[in-house]
Image (cartoon, rainbow, N blue to C red):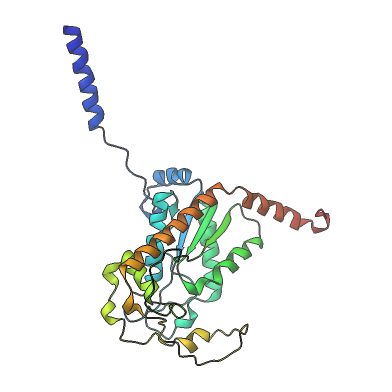
Length: 294
């Protein structure tokens, strides 16, 4: 009886001790929040997969912040990385925005610096163990820059792969839009709705009608003919659409859809072993093109 009592007390004491033992700290997904030791653990847990949310500094109508694109895409990337662990690079605003240089607050870097800085950034990420660099785009003005950058990775050998993840917010079951979807491109209903989820404190719907986001149509060219001034010709206020009709309902749907898409992309990239193998094969064969099997 006495021994049974001692055993019970010992078990109770052990259980109490275990219950009081603090759980290990949660590993942050944010590069800048990790200590050096935690960073090593993070890279291992992420299987070398890192996200580079890519935004810009530009006007977003009269009602959204200058950094809106990065604020939104970083919100999406951080939430996605918490579902499927990846290390998320700090704020990156250094993209293409020459078309908004006439607007206050815009920071537009030269094409040379954009490409050089992005290359050195991905190189440094890879040197630190990010062998799968996923650039998650949050700015429409980067839609041509980023695929081009990814293509230029074939210029010289790399021990890592660059992946580009585009903006994908729409999907089946999406709430009905109140504005014209054809011109809902910048600070309009869709983007403003997402901002109401990511940073509601910076959204000012009461200002959204202070300027026009209508298409001015000042240049008429046939399909297939492109000119760099097209955006300014159509939307000189750097506002395309009607942000005043934005809603949390639409924002919740589009934000969730975007996050889910990034989660799916992270999982696919983690599972991808072919891209680097083929990249290495390509570089080896490019050194001796006459020996490439036919």
